[in-house]
Amino acid sequence: MNRKPGAAKKKITLTRGNPHGVFHDLFDADEAAELTMRADVLRGLQSWLVDSELTQTAAAKELGVTQARISEIKHGKIGSFSLDLLVRLAARAGLRPQLRLAA
Image (cartoon, helix red, strand yellow):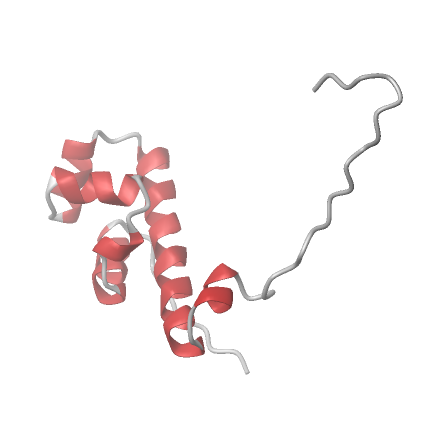
């Protein structure tokens, strides 16, 4: 960014959201909790796709879904998946999904 000599710097103010994540800023606590879990499992599946170096077709065959579903995982389409389906897919990928409760 090129500024003219003597031009004032713009002050940037950052606002911190909920420390539990953006879903807690946007949704009720129960829906935010589910979305957070779905996002965590979806990110795990995305990492598995990258690490496995499988084609989308091969990954689809391994997980028992269509190639289009793998594309939705790859592109983070969280609204396309229920939590239970994501957990099943993660288990099929060998990711050993677990749930921890904290007070």
